[in-house]
Length: 430
Image 1 (cartoon, one colour):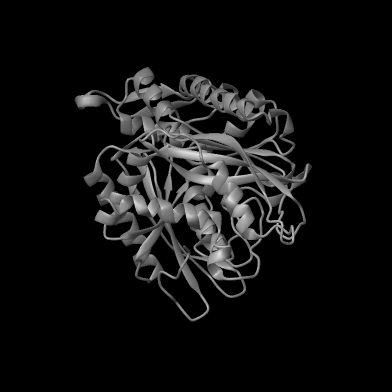
Image 2 (spheres, one colour; image 1 turned 90 degrees about the vertical axis):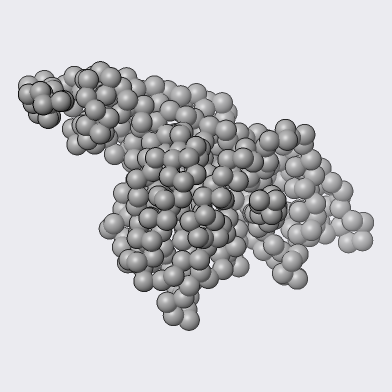
């Protein structure tokens, strides 16, 4: 994973992230040089009509959108794209915690990387329905001979090694359909990554993850939630209510077309009724040759606020389910297209009772940085971060902070690579 897709010079590696969303497909091409600086080379966006709540429901429409976005990204970047890292979401995604225990070889009682992999494999021996498969296995913490709080047990001496992992599962059919769309568009799938994990790479600061933070990514069809503490992800969830629900409410409440409702939301919508002037009027074209229609900005806000409150309340329920609601010292970070509605951060702070901010992609050195400095690009940029960081020899993303250690390359392959290899084996059946 993370091998060069193209090269602009001998010192750069190219990675492409594709966010296939309910309302749009975003493709981002990035390069990292030998100094570790990440530059955005190209961006492509296309309208998406082939998904419903994050799941592919029309292959042909999705393929067309993917091809259009990647063609645009390839053209602006000036590189040939061969393979991509794609995000997966949808309310079919589920997560749970599992624990395992193994004994250490009596030869020297030193824990090696193979012992950790053996433990993680033990935690994945769980009965799974035939239509579901593991997407990610993320170590939470280890216990060596009763000593808890161990982040990396490799090199320690011990007899008994215990561990807790966060397992994320999804429908096999949903992953296969994403794979088919990318393949039919003429590209290869390098990896499939849960979207809230990807978004967290681009918008959350390291210190926020350490002290406790919740990420709420409000997209078009789904709202993705990820909870972090002690620099480790503790809970993930995807719910099927998001920005499209707000648009539908406006369409029904004001009696306008869907395109008009989307424009009203994006151009004039606010998340708090108090932010809208009662006297301000918005004029829109009438339907079927009828006269132009005037709509008050305050009635528009009265439609938007209740639905946004509902989305945030559902997110609050998921955060409470995680058991870390009282540990969010850094509050919540909102991202995705839904976070662009003015006042959503203040509404989130009121609903969740913690500090809230809107998160933009950060950590980029140059190139088309300004173009992707927008919450709607958080997942696509995060997929690029995921691909670049998980391919580095310094460590792996989502592996509990465990660094790679000496020995044969096969011995130190990351858990993420193993999961990716297993996922690719599913697709051999296609």
